[in-house]
Image 1 (spheres, one colour):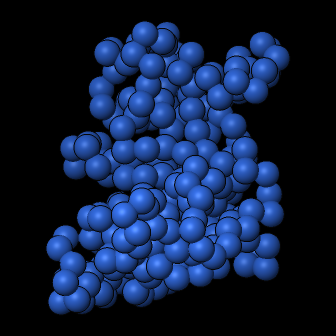
Image 2 (spheres, helix red, strand yellow):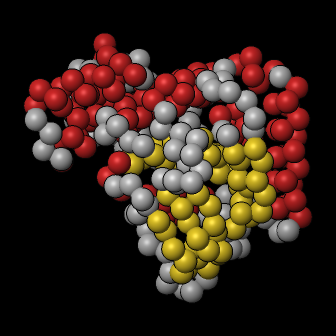
Length: 254
């Protein structure tokens, strides 16, 4: 990682909606090239809003957001796969490229590469109703990867999946991030998931949303199931969990 050239940097960012109540307050952070950052905190602490600010989908009411690289080099995956139900997996993944008027030959190659990266090259013709929940999320991930992002933003993408599928996709995401070298910001409620995947875990408290603690996970990528059995992993999970409990004492409700 090169911390001197962040892909996105937030400086004392605050955000309030129409009623004037602050949603985010004095949030400062940066994401370096190739870094995996996890945001974890109570429901309503502003994690998803912060992700939207990073993406440029929401403008802060105070502070500064700097994106040295082009904002169209950002991929986003939401909690819902948000696939077009009438379209094939291929056409769902191709949508961002078609919006950019990518030539047909290049479009085909890039879509098939993205589907292969998530293990769905053989399901390119399938419609969403023919896919499992995990497969739908893989299509959504392929749609984000097809733009070859330097920064991938993930808003609780595995929250609605069963535990086995969730663990498998976590492994796959760790492998993809290590292989492709993109930076990732991952919003989650799961402490173990944040520690298993991230280089840094930021704990947020709400009312208003702000960063309360930061933890560094010193382990190489990719990380798979054996890492979850390591003593260092279990210790870090306990430390992050304790930090989250402190936000409860401050009035938060997980």
